[in-house]
Length: 143
Image (cartoon, rainbow, N blue to C red; front, top):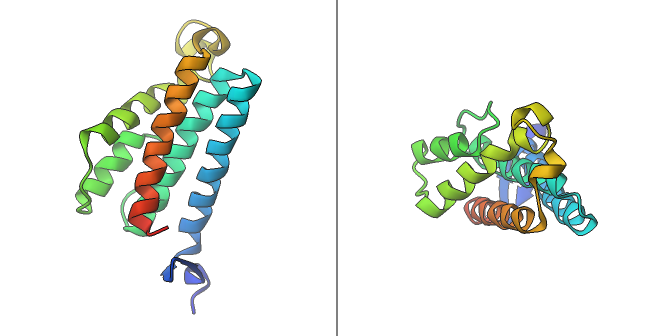
């Protein structure tokens, strides 16, 4: 068997790359939760985006779509092209998370240091949005 198809998710052969992206996404959401607990809200925001992006990339790669982007909204568009039904609530989560890809890291992205832009409430909301996207990916990969 091809080394790229050597892992299984619920009995289905999948490219090992898909598993790598999904496993890293799950680590990123855990990092977001730990950063939230420690009060590093900008880090929680960033890792929420990263978890979502990586999980969606896993599914897009599995479906043989175009995945070379950092936009969660774009990745959902790719999945819609592949025939998956994407509801507006998921698009809303993706659009919200995309905003934080840069602003959670770079002081010049929003004319303020990221640690001044984030609070516990916002970080929690972004983690919840990320979890919704990860659940969607899990459901569609059969995890």
